[in-house]
Amino acid sequence: MNHILKTTAAIIASAFCCFAQTAEPVVSVTEHGVKFGAGVITRHFENTKIKGIAGGSTVTTVGRGAMQETISIVSTGTSGKMDVETIDCFGPVISLEYGIWQKEALTLSLIGDFQYYCLDNSRRINGTTTETHTFTAVQHSDFGSATGNIYVLGGNFKAKMDMDLYILDLGLKGDYAFSESFEIFAAVGPTLTFADTESKVDGRNDSDEDFIFGLYAGAGMAYWFNEKIGLSCEIRYDAAFEKVETKDIKQDLNGFGGALKLLIAF
Image (cartoon, rainbow, N blue to C red; front, top):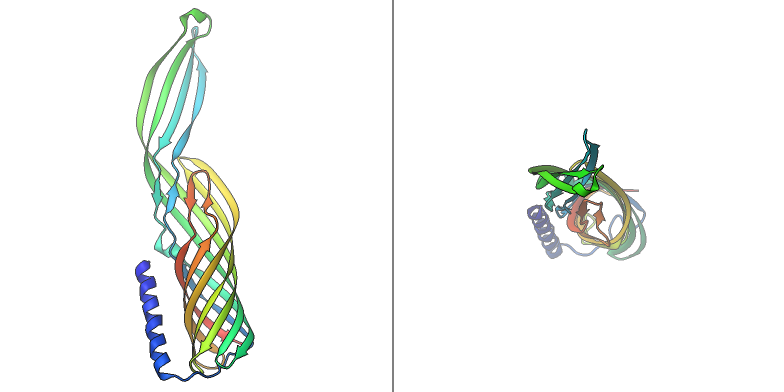
């Protein structure tokens, strides 16, 4: 993923240098009005952290004689990380932009983006299951109690996470036109993420829904084939103020990313 982002950044930088040396500043053909964009966006998510397993159950039975048998079963597991699949780092994006100020080759706009990601991760982690049998005298207390039959078994537990991310951002965008077809831009603004998360570790389920605020900053270039149709490529960084977590997992949402969008000017 980092290799893809570095390659995209190099393409943007090379194109910028080429156009900057040969083009004179002019007014963009899209200086005012509304632009609609749709395409694909990507973000480099950190691996999902597994907090570990610490839980179990207790079953009590009464024997035939004067003894009561208590069976305690406890599972414990090590913490670890789940890899985020490369395909899950890509999602759809739509945007709406409105120009609010223009002077010569510079245009300021308000822009809003809506993004969606679906993270579906799973892995197996090592652990142990301890089964303890305790026998207690229930009719003659002088007999006391005794513990025996302790079994310690190796565990291979499955950890799984399903997370849907719905992200809305609103930013201030500045465009500078080098020609009627080519422009560069930068944008910055707040983000709001709704995270719907479900986790399952060793058969234990947990879920959580969170609204998380954050910030983003991005830069890129756009090429207009005519007055109505264009294509943009953007590099951006998203920072969330909180991490998404359940009882068993934790996911960091910060990361570099990029977007490729088809633009339509109205």
